[in-house]
Figure: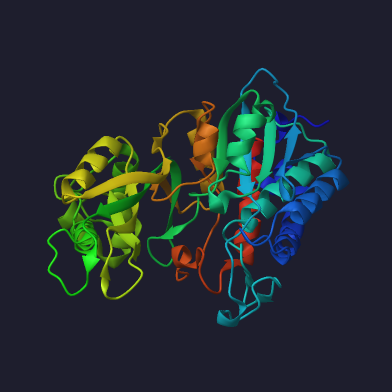
Length: 448
C-alpha cells in the first residue's frame, strides 16, 4: 500500500490522482443519499445504512452495520493507519434528517434535483452532504490502498435529529469498542464558510457547544369555577413565569471559543471588538456580525409550549409550560439559578432533556492541520474557533474523552443564507461545495 507521508506536498490531486474520482462521484453519492427518506421519527436509516455499507465494500473496505433496534442503523468502518500506536481520528455524520412538507418546496425534498449549481433536498446540508464527502474519501482510500498516518474511523449514525438515543448514545454505551484508541473527532457544526465580503471568507471551526436545558415548568394552584375570583390561579402563575422568562435578557458572557471568533471576524472587517462592550461591538459589526455572534455571546431561554385547562368555565389546578434553555460552557449553574430567580411562587421546574456544554482547547497539531487543509484550498480565507449554539453527536463521543470538533469543510456562495436552510424549506448544497469538501477532508486525513 502507498505511504501517505511521501505524497503530502502540493494540491490534493497531487497527493493522490484517485481523489479526482472521489470528487467526480461525491455529487451522485449525495444525490442517492437524499433519495433515501430517513426522516426522523417517521422513517428509519436501515436502507441508507445498507447502501453505505455496500459502497464501502465496493471500494474494498469492510464495514459493520449496527442496529440499536430494528431499522435504527449505523455503519462503522475503520481504515488502519501506518502508526497504530497513534490516536485514531473519528469522522462522524448522521444519516437521519428532519421531516419535510413537499408542498412547501420548489423541488420535491427527496428527489435530489440538481439545478442552478445546487443539489436540492432534505439533508443536503444537514448532513448528507458530509456523509457523501466522508464516504467519497473513504472509498478513495479503499480504491487506492493509501495508508493514512493513523487509524481513521468512519461512522455514519442514526437518530442525531432526535438526540442520538438510537445512534451515538447507543454506540457509546453499548459499542465503545468501535472507538478504541480514537483521540480526536470531526463532524457537523463548523468548517463552513462565512462571508467577509464578496471575495474573502471566514471558516469557523467548532470547538465548543452550548448546553441544553429543556425544562418543564409546572404551576399549581386552586381549582374552581371560572366565574369566581381566584388569587391562586395556576394559569396566571404559568403566564407570569412565561412572561418573566420570555422577556428576560441574559447578560453577555464571552467564552474562549467565542472571543476568538469575534476577535478574528472583527479584525477581518477592520472593526475593533471590545470584550468590555459586547453590545457596542456587535452594533459596529452590523447585521452580519449579529447573525454570526448574537446567539453565542449569552445564555438563552425561550418559552415554546403551554398546556392548561379542559373547559372554559373551569379554573384548572395545574398548568404547564415548556422552555428551551441553552447555556454556554461553564455557565450551567449560573443559568439555572437565573431561571429559578424568575419563577414566581407556585411554579417549579424539571428537566425534560439535559445535555452538558462542552469546550475543547483550540490549539495543537490537529487544529493546525484543519486550518492548513482549509487554507490550502482557499488561500484568501481565514479560520477561527467557534461555539455551536446547539448540540450534536459530538457530546456523546466527548464522554469517552475524545476531543471533538465541528469541521465539515463546506465552501459556500457569499449570498447563500446557509444557517436558515437548516431544517428549512428548499434546503440545498452547492455542487462545488461538495467537491471542495472532498479536497479538504482528503488532505486532512493524509496529513493530520
